[in-house]
Structure formats: C-alpha cells, structure tokens
Length: 426
Image (cartoon, rainbow, N blue to C red; front, side, top):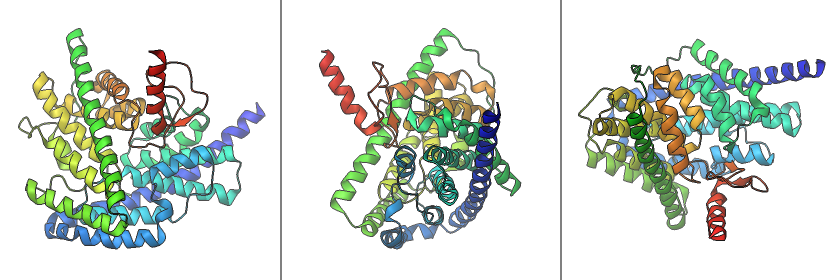
C-alpha cells in the first residue's frame, strides 16, 4: 500500500509540473496566434511575403534547428528509444516558427507546436531531475497530454491522445496518472490565463437505426479515403521536395510561392492559417462548396511538406468538417452532426487515435455525437491502413489482426510486414 501511495504522489507531482509548464506555454502560444491571425486578416498583402518568410525561417532552422525538424515524430521516437534529451530550444523555436507561419499565411495547425513544447519542457525536467528511463517516458507522455489537452481545451482527449498515439492499437497505461494530471492542470492554467477556446455547435440527439448505421459506415470509408489521400500527398510532396530542392530555405520559399499561387487562384483567404471560420460555417451552411475540403487538404500538404511549422489537427478538422458537410447533404444527415463527426473522425484516422478523438468530439460538441462519431472513427481508422501523419508511431499487432509482432515496429514498416504476411498466407 505504501508503495502505491508513493507512486501516486510521484506521478501526480510529475504531472503537476508538466501541466504548469505546458499550460503556460500553450496560453502564450494561443495568445500570439490570435494576434497574428487578426493582423494577417486585416493586412492580406502580407501573404505575398510568405516565400521570403520561408527563406528566413529556413536559414534560422538550418543554423539552429536541424536537430528538431522531426517534430512530433522526434517526440515519439524519444518516448520509445530513450535517447538523448529533446533540445530545450525546441519549445521557443517551434513556437516562433508556427507563429510566423500563421502570420504570413501558411496553412497549418497548432497541435504539433503544443505537443512539441510540452514534450521538450517535460524532457528538460526529466534531465534536470536525473530520473530513471521509465519515469522519463512518463514525463514525456505527460508533456504530450498537457500540450494537446491545453491547446484545445480538451483534457480528457489530451490524456487519451498521449496514451493512444504512442503505440497504435494499445493504450500506454503506464503513464496514465501523470498524463491525466498534466492535461487537467494544463487546461486549467491555459483557461486561467484568459484563453477562450472555440465553441462548437451542439448537435441534437439522433437515434441510431440500421439504415443510419449503414450510412455511417459509408461515411467512414469516405473519411478513410480522404485521410489516406492527405497522408500520401504530404509524404509524396515532402519526398519530392527534399530530393530535388535539398536546401531548406529554398524548399520553404518554393512551398511559400505555391501557397501564394493557390491563394490567388482560389480567390479567398479561407484556406490560409487555421481556417476556424470555415470550420464553424460547415456546421450550418448547406451551400458550402463541395470541394472546400480538397482545397484545404492541398494547401496544408504544400505548407507542411515544404517545412513550415505547425500541426495537422486543425487543418484536418477543417477538411473533416467540410467533408462532413458535403456528405451530410448527400446522405440527408443533420449538417451539424455530420460536420462534427467528420471533424473528429478525419483526424482520428490520420493519427490512429479513434478513442481520443471520439472523446474529444464529446468534449467539444456534447454527448449527442455518440455513438455516431465512434462508428465513423473506428471504420476510418481501420480502412486508413498502416498509414499515419506520425510515421514514427509504433505498432504491436497489424490492424487486420493476426499474431502479435515479435517486437514493436515503426508504423512505416507495418505495410511491408502486412504485404509479406498476405503473400505467405496465399
């Protein structure tokens, strides 16, 4: 009993320290993001300078930031491999890079920044305290939870995301207490510092019927297709750009130029930055253009593959909500429910986190989204296959079943294992 009390006290203390740090960092980041987004909206001409901003950011990262370019994948690798400490400069550099990306009109999100800040600050604590490798992993997972939970105002989803994202198909319960404490306290700190999170419409209750179940399964297949397309396009562009434009500053300048061309070609700034107004519009507007999701998908893939900083969550919320809007109209579903389900399920499929995003949907939009969001998220998760926006995720068992793998392998290797298994069975 005494040993359990000691462990609980230690885990709680770890989570509190990480929650304070990640919550404060998220509050500063969100406040800056609101400022630069408002300024860019009233000064749209600044978007023309995105290629120049790419050159400057690329030069800065080439000199001081090459060791942190792995982003969330670097964090996940560190959780698993317990190597050298995450550079403490990751927190300020990713914050600065993301804020400038949004200032000049890049299409990016914010979860990547919050997760990387939380994890790097947590790792700094781990090294200062000279903790064991096991405790360090707990602190890192708490940093992920604290960052994700505080930046979206969804602490329970933040906890589950940190536990679920580490190993696909398995919850990392060893870090449950510090992750929960960090996410809860991080959210409280962020809100206490004056941050007000986006309020989403609350859909009405819609009873599940056999016909509706079939509709949601088809909906989930469409979400899986779109999520897979985003992952494949981003990977393809990143590989191509790195091969043919090895200089990071030039690569970012080219990506910035492409975003400017897309902005001018589409004739609207709706696809720049986070795109929150369009996300909210998807819940109510029956006349939203059906291809809206595709335009945002392309703008975000170009921005991130070129090397600009940010995250994928909010852009995928945009893609999912607008896709849900279109599918809802085609299938006769309530727009607010279809948009909300699409919002959560698209990121769930892309990140292999169906439980976390189902809970996140409830935290953002109320319990009426259940069981609909769970059905769609699970279907989309399964049919996205062994793909992810975080290829450094590990997997212990292939999604289609079979015997457990001899050891955890990076998700990027799972597709080859799956193909070899299929050929062997045939």
